[in-house]
Image 1: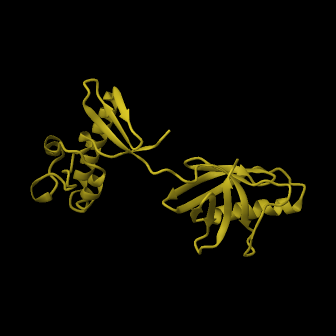
Image 2: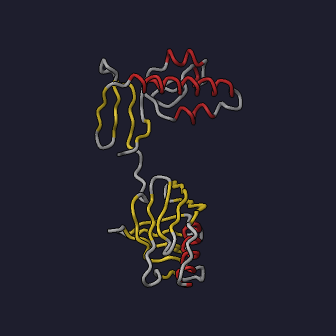
Image 3: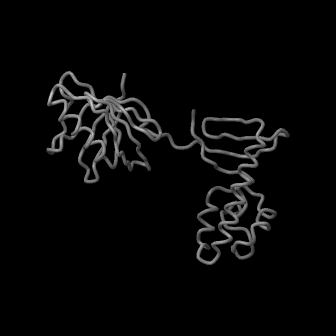
Length: 223
């Protein structure tokens, strides 16, 4: 199921022209009720950026227009009766066939999926492979990561912004590991995950890195 981000629609055009400038003479914002009547062109969230410039002189106006924007959006969403979808655009229509809302496909999250760990930073300036006989995994949803740390399982949240990453805090089950090497591995692997702040992908190899560029975890897609 693709994720969609509002792109252009008439109801969101409460405060900007197609150019992105706020409605009103001289580019200055006018009262919300006049904006609603005068602005009937599609516009994106440039509205927030433009109006924010006036926040120091018109904080009440910003709150009023933002509220009107939200109400208009939810009102149009409730009127949706049909839709069309392409690979990159979703359009909602009312029962009369009028376009209400237009969305663009959100950028795909390259982390989402199931991964096998091929290496992790052991905290001693070395990336090592999993202990023989153990398996390390990472399963990313849009906002959670979970998997096996060799003996126990772990889970936690994460955020992504471009190639910037923040993982954790992670929680783990507390089963005693019979092998001390596996126990050490768990601690080192989870520490490496939470030390990761960026990532890159070459072919099918995903590499999580620390702020200084040190490799923390390497992964490949699970079969």
